[in-house]
Length: 380
Image (tube, rainbow, N blue to C red; front, side, top):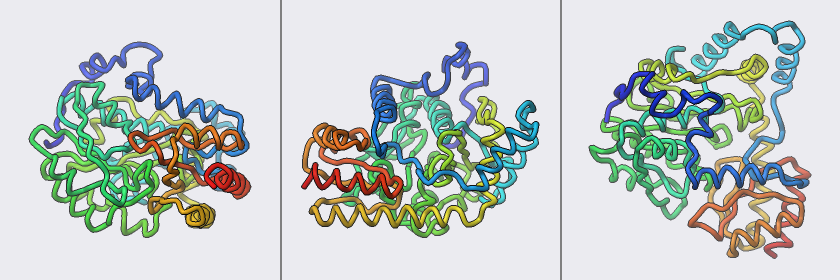
């Protein structure tokens, strides 16, 4: 189903409830399942613990250059001014990095805002949203709230998105296919060549949304990203975020790369209201050429220690291409969660139906050491 304009901006606002004062995208799109998920994550984030390893944040923090830029923004007299010039600079840098025109970039308050708005857009078409399950469902739930129908596709034996099965589900009723690569919560990445062939084929039939939030941590970033296909295939969007490897989760900055017409359509819905300090931090992050590689190396080294422990404990785990690990505990998640919390370590919420598996983020070395000791006690 090619991209079309289902509604005018006014109609969209009325349909989504955006005209109600004080409502944000996040609150507007929460059904019971999503509300339970968000509540669990917020509870975990607020739980007193020495190691909060539940939300896949980058504990090593922003680039020193980004910290300096944000402080300068706050103390140089820029804070009282709207950051329009700086915003254009950020868009230009992103466009250069991705090899596209600035008109093809959509900014968001975190990539989550983009996921929700795109979900709402396609949900209003009342079509089907194909996605891997279990998986990250922010786009899917937004589409369902707007009237779309979720079509979950089970993961394959490697706990990867099953591209063949997803392609087989595409029909005339499909509005969008959503793929997170690497996948959340399993941490796996699909074969690069297979994903690119999937995008080329499926985007001729319907819109494809590829969420690359964690790709900076994966091996062979350049070979795995599908952003190079955006200019060739109109029905494609790639989403990224500064919340993960760049360490700016608290500043909420994300972006999408797509064709210029669809980007303009999404910008009509009021996306990308970013702050001056956040923009300054993002610009400095992109200019700091060595930061991502250095941070990735730290994450991979700490991840290897956790995987070695899981090998010692005889626990099965997915092949991780992210800053988190998904592993089979062999016990009810509730029991493992409580046991880890008793050792002052917070892990992620459960991911039904895989209720004897757990997801744990990579933290600072001292946090990871505490988590490994806790795992030995809880699982050993």
